[in-house]
Image 1 (tube, rainbow, N blue to C red):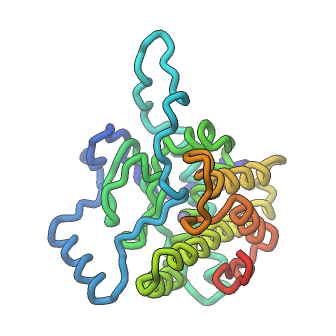
Image 2: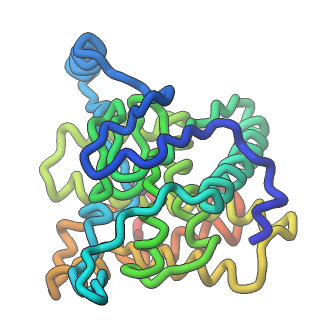
Length: 298
Ligand SMILES: [Zn+2]
């Protein structure tokens, strides 16, 4: 992926290394929700019957820490301390974010709408959001309440090591998926989802959540399509993206974690579903091909 040729976004905030228990504010311009703001959010959620505090993550069960054997400690030393946010990852994310802005701006314009880009917060360890405290176990997520994407760059390492999906396009897919949730928010899809899911039992709610997540995968594919049309992808990028989509499928994660798979508990979709919907967006570049809510077969 020739991400250096993407326009770099300024809508990025690097909160750096907050440490395992840090607040992530670190003197940066991080959002600070006082008690008053939280009360307002809670009241709003009571008034409107929605739950604006919901985090929309990439992976069911979050990017929980990798199993012990994944971090060998040669020579008796403990696990290496987390390195600071790497410039390379930050730059790549900033450029990919800029390209999603250009892509979605054009799509929204064609629909007679205006795209308001999200801010992307890079953190390391833990940080705060209007959706609550985030730590590395949450993985990347989008917070509808503050319209920001949160990304712990350590997840990129996890994508490589734990999920077996290395490569810059795999990482771009993560960013594009979370931006896809922002698009859903702007399009009013998320509001409908919230209203509907409130009245559902857990099983139906999970099924609806799968459709929401698969649509974010499809929207990630729509961005990938736009990048490919401008010849900014390399050979093998598509495979990287598909491998990443498959790697974060609920069935694969459950099998890895517990050895068994419980489809009723899926919230993001199986590997095959995630691949299929990413591909639907990638092949067409058309948001209309991403109506996972109308599709009879997910
Ligand atoms: Zn998601």
